[in-house]
Image 1: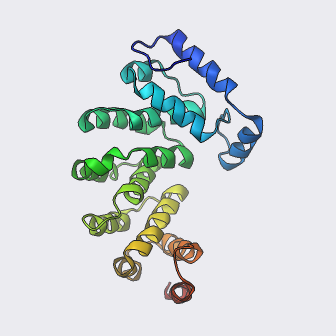
Image 2: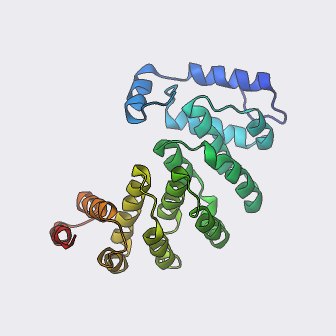
Image 3: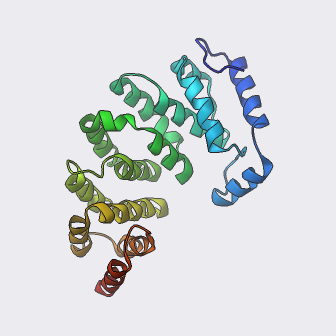
Length: 238
């Protein structure tokens, strides 16, 4: 059945949801449930869900978003993927993205949507200012969204100083915010070692994020053994 539609009705969405149910896999559902507990999950593999999203994005996206529901993990994720694949002016996409962001309620949705929003690379300056504004919010999932967007699209020469400054400014102590920040900094270390080390030595990070960043650097297969041994000595600084 085709999901590129010019008009979406409630019945159309009911049929889509049924098709999603038929595409689920029980073993994969059980695997995902362990990774994302306390979430209603159908168990649909990512390539299938992306395929649905790409087809929906070719049609009437506002119509789809208007009838879309949010009961299942895959429903919420699908909406974010559709917004990411949608061929629309950047400013209009941001309006829909802003409305969508409160639906993010776990790390899997957050990170997959971030990875899909490659449009931010084309409109990097406008996108970066948008993300900086979002960083002021209290919602921990939106803060993590910003950090993973930095990781995915802004670890480059023109933005690295601003990214590190933004990272250092994060004070939200939610577990997945801190984990996202440590992940961001560990990847920044691979690309911009000196700048990242300067931040680590500045004492601007909380102790938990500092040590988790060191751990992730030492776990990285992109860091040589000698560097890992040097990084391990930095544990004693805190």
